[in-house]
Length: 54
Image (tube, rainbow, N blue to C red):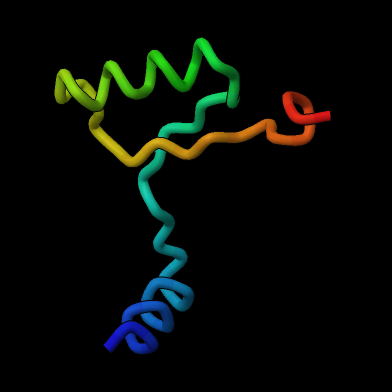
């Protein structure tokens, strides 16, 4: 039950474990290469869309 899981996470201040990466052609390529090599401990989250896609 996803609702229950989200409720428990919210009540206990549980946050996802992520690694943020500014979005750019070079950074996305690096992230992809790291995923292929298995060099990713947490999930990647691409950030900075407004800066790159203006």
